[in-house]
Image: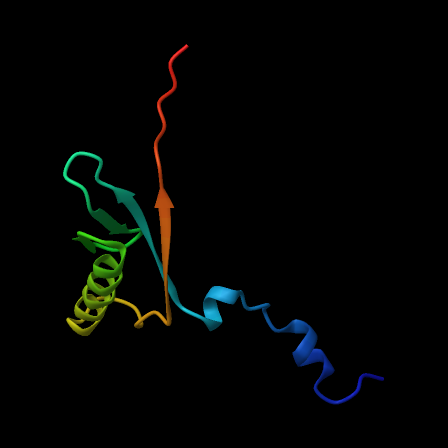
Length: 92
């Protein structure tokens, strides 16, 4: 005999981390020619730039707030993740 509610607990789908905490990821690259940084959101039409990392962080927050307050699909993310990408070219 099953304890009350055990079947519902066992049969319910397992929720992932992203279902509890909504996050948005930006790919960040340093501009080697002009200096500064650019950031592009993965999966969303959001892009911004800043002359310093401090300015970039502020611009990313502002861009996310504007994007989701303008009626974009989805909920406002609770976490903004900056993923820094660096290219290196090696010669043989």
